[in-house]
Image (tube, rainbow, N blue to C red):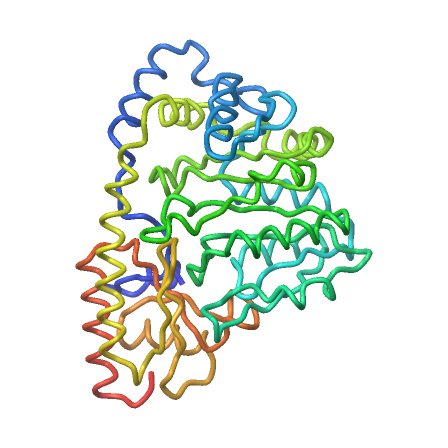
Length: 375
């Protein structure tokens, strides 16, 4: 949709989960200083990343989860969570192997599993209860081909934060079946008034050998273009993943790792500012959606920065709806069908866009539907 939107003059986009914020000044200045000081700034790093950076990641993980991990045995620096997941799926999937995904889920998880001849198994969330986990159905989805369960909390696209009780049950089910839980975590810094509800399953020592934890700098540090993240995993799994990572990537860009060192070497005071601005944008989008119940029905997200409203006006499917909305109203949204079967007849709207973009998009939506019964 972003590519289609770029070809429509004057289009405004709520489709891409790209933060409007600039990379914080202390990171920009820190990376300049480090590039000037590092005589090897233009060279490869070790495949698993700069030792100083891995040590900072280990300290960050200990502070956030209480779990001690080894920078050498458990941590690999990645070119963002997407590349990390690509490496992980490539490592663990033989043709026909299965990965369980919440439904709705992030579209690229589906695509990458298929890319490695795996099979995505959809675990439908309970939309009637604001997309909560349906734990009763999980055991029935696990087979001898199941390799892992993927969780994103807060969720993309629904913004749902899964509860501690739910996540502990998922962890126990995975433990009993000897499969992994892969935690894709871009959004844990964005929990608004629900901070106390957020729980990281990677903080449970019992499940440490069954968890792969990925964190991205793209969202919380406004570093999407730097392509930087990290994976924390059991030692044996890292040894295998390194073979794939080295063969396909060699290493994450050194300059980005220097930026990561700058990011983790000082307090992340910018996050509160980001959160405050996003909360205002969430309220604005909620207000605008409330004014058009004949077009969209919506539920308030608990975290991340997405709305996932249901299409109430007459339409064929979410993809057709989104493309015609772009072509006729010049507003870009993401079709819900891309997020799995349960996402059909919804669209995703990102409120990481600035206020002017949000208001202009909804002005155009309201104007278009005042003239047309359907897009």
